[in-house]
Amino acid sequence: MNHKTLTFSRGESAIFFRTLNKRVNSYFKDNNLSRNGNWRLYVKTIAMFAMYLGPYALLLFTDMPWWANLLCVLTMGVGMAGVGMNVMHDANHGAYSSKGWVNKIMGGSMYILAGNVYNWQVQHNVLHHTYTNIHGHDEDLEAGRILRFSEHSDWKRFHKFQHIYGVLFYGLLTFNWVLTTDFTQSARFLKRKLAFGKMPKPSTQWITLVITKLIYFSIWIVIPMLFFSAAWWQILIGFFIMHYVAGMILSIIFQLAHVIEGANMPLPDASGTMKNSWAIHQLFTTVNFSTKSKFMNWFTGGLNHQVEHHIFPNISHVHYTKISAIVKSTAKEFNLPYNEYKTTRKALIAHFKHLKQMGMNPATLTA
Image (cartoon, rainbow, N blue to C red; front, top):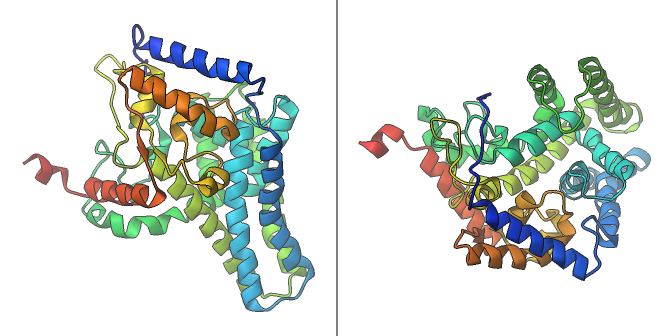
């Protein structure tokens, strides 16, 4: 990753955000609303945890046929993604509640999703939200050598097939958290002294990481092997399926917002300055999809409203549908883009078109 400091343009372009911020603040003040979550989010929290942990209890205390066990594992994968998108995400942005301790507890759900709070906050809140879609700075664009998301990444011959094989790797997202990502990120982020808020002591971070991993494996591997009636290999397969379902859902939702036709991937100039202000940069690099779908608005935790989320990450997703009209009209007023796909299907098609485009040999495109 590129460690050079970037700056965003200032000046007249900053007027857009001041105007938009004033209008959004007025919306909450005029309607006497908190910018945090409300009863709808709390009810959804119960539903998501029920989908994630309810089937686990069934598997632990009941003897069911194989197809029922499989259904439970699949449901747990959906619930795992749901907790991540709706509960953990809002909480680690400080948007779940006005009370810091509530955000900390709900944000800690990351530990039972296989991840680590410190790593997630640095990668997502610091790197992704600050340097959205900037090659060498936004780690969400990094996929090793297997996938090429940006024209600024190195091209390999096998990338020409990535629009075919790429989606198969999406399901490994959370599985990688469990095994390797958290350890490599902790070493890298601590070395760079990156933090979202107070910098943790390296020893505290490593102890927390090891202990939470041991607890995680105890819950999802050791206890099932001791109490489930299934064979050990069946438990491991179930564990993998749960993660694969969750990883597939989370990866696709995130990709449709940034790794897609319509989302720019700009670079800074020679002095390290981006062309636009931070807020306008978000408009050029972020895409909404399926915002009229009640199910997508509910299940994805507002991540289909990525434009609103990236400009106002400290506002709970339960408000995005309402403030989207303000963002859209203000962007139009300033002659700025507001990228969106009307349906999930159209967004998926655009994503795989982008993968195919990025898989082409750059030499032949410029010849």
